[in-house]
Length: 169
Image 1 (cartoon, rainbow, N blue to C red):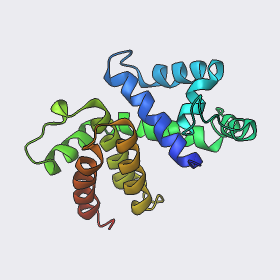
Image 2 (tube, one colour):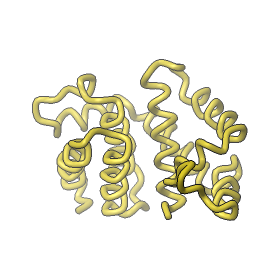
Image 3 (cartoon, rainbow, N blue to C red):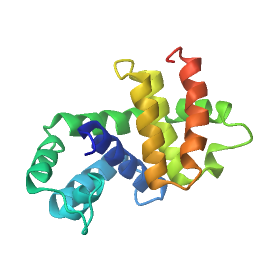
Image 4 (cartoon, one colour):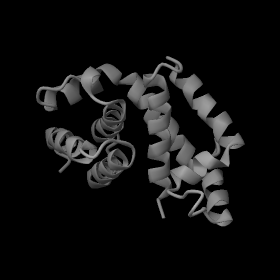
């Protein structure tokens, strides 16, 4: 079973991805759209929980996830904090990522890798209450799940350097 925090991070990734592909340039609008679709489409939640049509999520698990991702739920608050944090510090985060990604500009990275890195770099730099090992492990697993075959290694290499930069190893 995937944790509530993992679900929140994956949700934040989807929101950032929507902004990145140009569905909207407004992060709050992207959050609002996700919430509207999320409430209407249980398939999204089933996918976020790591289930599928062939391996459906138990109803009790779906209900618990819906509760934690509701606007008053603790995990939705984490999603909002992450998305708004990336938005507020986007320039500094992208500069940080570029500094540690040898021969790669952020604009040339895949959208998945770029946004996983943004979320994790934000956590490492600005969320000191989140253990760095959790941030790194979650980012690597999310990159593997949504990115290419090489995404986990790519993300790990850059985030490890960023964690060292902030003394979070």
